[in-house]
View 1 (cartoon, rainbow, N blue to C red):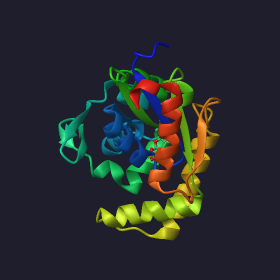
View 2 (view 1 turned 180 degrees about the vertical axis):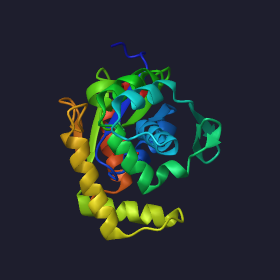
View 3 (view 1 turned 45 degrees about the vertical axis):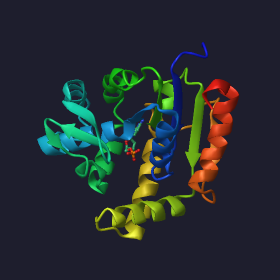
View 4 (view 1 turned 135 degrees about the horizontal axis):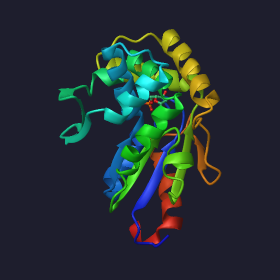
Amino acid sequence: MSEYAPLVITIDGPSGSGKGTIAKRLSSEYGLRLLDSGALYRVLGLAALRRGVVLTDAVALEALAASLDVRFDVAEDGVQVVLEGDDVSREIRTEEAGRAASIVAAVAPVRSALLKRQRDFSRPPGLVADGRDMGTVVFPEAQVKIFLTASADERALRRCNQLLAKGFDANLADILSDVLERDARDTQRTAAPLKPALDALELDCTDLTVDQVLQSIRALILTKRPRLV
Ligand code: DC
């Protein structure tokens, strides 16, 4: 790939590993577009809940995914997620929407129906994409691939603090069991399971600060695209 092709950075990992934070920082630092692919699955989960679609009904979910009227608008405080004209940025962050997302995401035809929407985010000057299968399935040609992990206890604690800071109710024990349940579902499904790409840099950030994680990624970007840094 030419040095002038759009730079694509993929960040995959389990729930709560800090992918979103790292992706946002890299996107603003390098002036790249941002794809929060989890938000897409969360919107689909929410749309299914709202319409009373059974979360394992592959035929209904595939149709819903193909016709999903969702926009990601750039807002002052980040990205505004709009489903059928309704701002759902806050609602998709609830545990209920996350759980629904994880269930619908295991349905193979749903993943195929959302593939093109995700790939369309890759335009010059480049993209930072976070999720579960960004480096393995959606952007296998990406030059910089990161697999970000942290212990389940640490991820549950971070998630709990995040929810409390946003004004949601949060219970650490419930969140830990939810994290473990979601890890199991995301890694054990047959359709695009959560796993590191063979060429991904694996970073366990349990005891690392955000800046330490960013340092390692910058060093990797430097080896791939020296002129960018
Ligand atoms: O990253 P997140 O917690 O917002 O994602 C919510 C769920 O969506 C997650 O449990 C699994 C699913 N997901 C996926 O299967 N593939 C992706 N690329 C992103 C998310």
